Length: 162
Ligand SMILES: [Zn+2]
Image 1 (cartoon, rainbow, N blue to C red):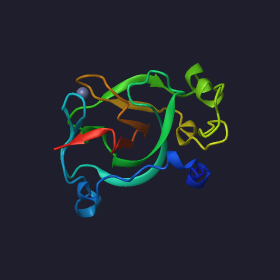
Image 2: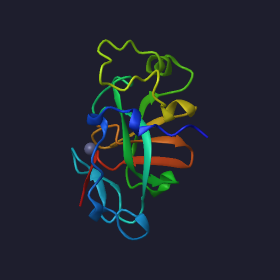
Image 3: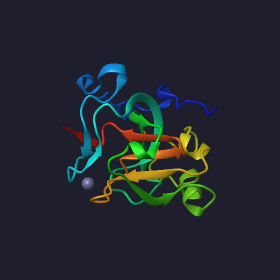
Image 4: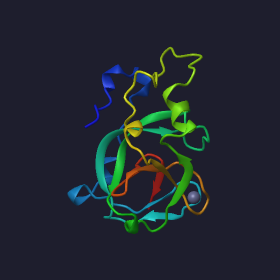
């Protein structure tokens, strides 16, 4: 198992508020349907994703540079791609390519107060076939990540609810 990302190693501004508890329904399922916050395209219907607390490194929203990211920790978990109504996959794939290298060894020009990716546990680096999830209608994202064929995580704070 990979080491959990240690929150107490993170500078305070990196600690972020949890999501609105009213979004979490019975059995920790999403109480509202999850949509793209930019175009409103339906991503998952309600009662499909399970709320989980998990620290996962994601590139910033609308960033095309994988090394420019942050650790998110509120996710809707799905174990099957067929449970999505609509989802796209980013071409940013980590693995043994140079994209992964650029995440492991970025040159941090102003590392003060910023999570140093070289020291921080980056859960995604322990997985061979990480794919980022995007809105398939407008291609914005990433809104989440696929870690294994049966593990999909939608960032609960990068989506809209209805
Ligand atoms: Zn969209």
